[in-house]
Image 1 (cartoon, rainbow, N blue to C red):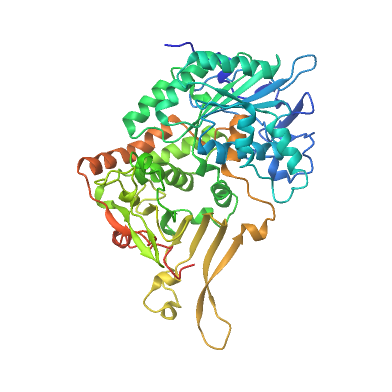
Image 2: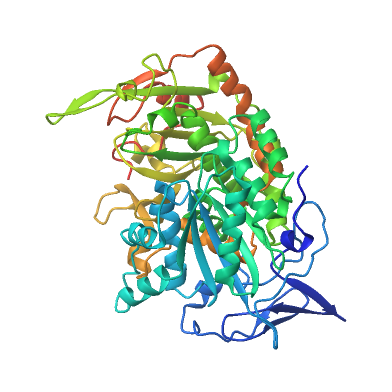
Length: 584
């Protein structure tokens, strides 16, 4: 087995020292050698000195709600003691440099998401003063060619464009490139030399972002761990999904990664957990008295998690055919959101407390049965004089493929809070609209005095809470009210929080939040290995049955609402999909 990284590499980004009944937090910002956070009991009182003092205070918090760099009282599920990491700077000592290496820098994800997110953090002054960004890939490229490539994807916040060009130039001058093979320790050793040269002898913290296919993960981690990890600070690795294809392959991937990294060093990213409305889900529930008492089987009739894209695989069919919509969307994005939605109140906002509650939800869920799942595949369709190709028309997809591009499922949680409540998921490509939302349908009012005003369709009288994750983020509650006039005519209206109308600033991209959390060592929005095991345990038997029996997906036209079977599945559980025409 290759040598493990040094303990300092796997430690948290901060230390906690105790003085009688007072906690003293040591942390550091770019302009001052030390910023101390003190608190009586468990409440941090920040003394913030930085050039970003003019920001909205909420912008200064990491995703756990504490001030940036605030330490949590727990760190890691393995009960390891916190090892002290090297601070950003100390009087008389060399400053710390943050070195970020994007492995797979020539790929679309890096160009469209990772580099723009890093620039956004730099533009908003959330990166330390001393940082460098390296691109690493097999493609031969110079530093200048990398800068030219990524400059076309960088954008500035709409409210601060006056210094955009200067900021871009400053950021690009901190970007460098090294070409090498993902499985070559020699190439990573050369990368290490370049990193040390740019770090200039300072203490270094290193973050590696693996924007590569999963079959490359282990080789890249092995080489980075053995030849390019930090010897004086921490080393962390962000791993993109998919995390395996089933329980067995996922466990094997985790086993291989942990030959070279500790669990605390692995940041399994699911970018949906970084979306603003997913972040707001816990706030909405746990900080508003009106919602928490209703959050149970007593008042909620069903919950729907809906994901739809209005385009097909578009040249990615070869990759998609190996995974399908269940692995690509449902097993990770939607299931993670479900766990956040349904979890019990955590002990604190500490990452491990929240992830513990999510794992409890996943382990309480009833195994998925084939009769509670509908799969579909889009076919070619002509509309408005334009022809849209079917899934198997993609030249990279086998003509006899039965890989689903659409799936709907009914899941159940076997605990006292949610017993009997159907949690419906629906995800698909080439549908009529692009949308991602959570819909909470409440129970009918017992003995409703106005039921005759709704006719026979009581669903029209159902209160519904909707969290629209994308596009055009919003939270709205559907209520019944009287239409003004002399008669008694009822109407269904929305109490609406429309983000673009309420908040004038641009909503950060999910990758910005997640990259910042990884730099800060905040793990709440990243997936722990036991979470991953529990998620795959739900879906692996179903996927195996679908593939062994070669279940033929129901065909649906490109641009439609999906297979008819999805509506029968909902009706089976006495549910109507909330995204039907005329409902919004």
